[in-house]
Amino acid sequence: MISIESYLIISTIMMFAGIYGFLTRHNVLAMLISIELMLNATDINFAVFNRMLYPEGQEGYFFALFSIAMSAAETAVAIAIMIHIYRHIRSIQVEKLNKMKW
Amino acid sequence: MEITVQTVVFYFLAFFIVLTSILTVTTQRIVRSATYLLFTLFATAGIYFLLGYSFLGSVQMAVYAGGIMILYVFSILLTRASGDNVERIKCSKLIAVLASVIVGAGIVLFILLTHGFISFADSSVTEIPVQVIGEHLISTGRNGYLLPFEVISVFLLACIIAALLIARKEEDKK
Image 1 (cartoon, chains in turn blue, yellow):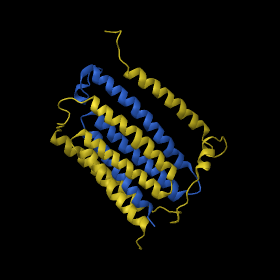
Image 2: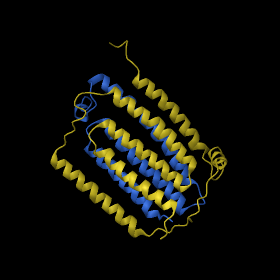
Image 3: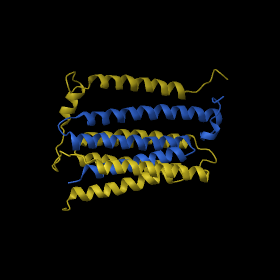
Image 4: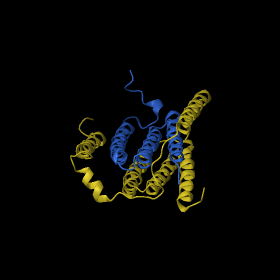
């Protein structure tokens, strides 16, 4: 019998690894990869809470399912934006993305 | 505590997830980062299988590990530029980020371990049949998810149009 805490420890570590990557990376694609890690950690939490605390309902299951679909759409649009930016300034490092700042 | 196949698989997956998710954010080459992310997503699908959610695990494998990773690899190869590999960060900023991440993780883990969850699940894995999932998805009753289902489908259509619109070639402007 695996306790609920051990599942949640995994998702906590994954979440904070994502936060660390988001704050330290300079490449926009690497930041997006970190965001995927965070989204994945929340999906694990939804599924685990549903299975361990409310096994008679299916709310967390469907939340995780819809969350996967949302993150697929979000990734597609974000990558389209990045390719477009790359065509304009030939780089996707965050230091150089300051055209719309001022 | 007796050792079962489930426990062994769980600890293997846990070790694998922790290792690959930390390597994802610490490795310097972005292609390696995407590869480690792929392994993390596969191990997450393994966690879903272990919980008895086979359909969710299959969706995770098909959408995340199949679809999204292809997008990542293509976009990494399309946006390759010199200087992508060297990511130097200031030492003071690195210390601040590390400290805040460790403190945040410590607070969350402390709350989590002292909360005392009341777990109802027994060790026997009960699988939700796919028919039940389908009926939930298209029903309008108490446990129905027809509205989010339709919203997601319209949302995906909007995303397809947006991605095409953003990433298309602009020929007539120049």
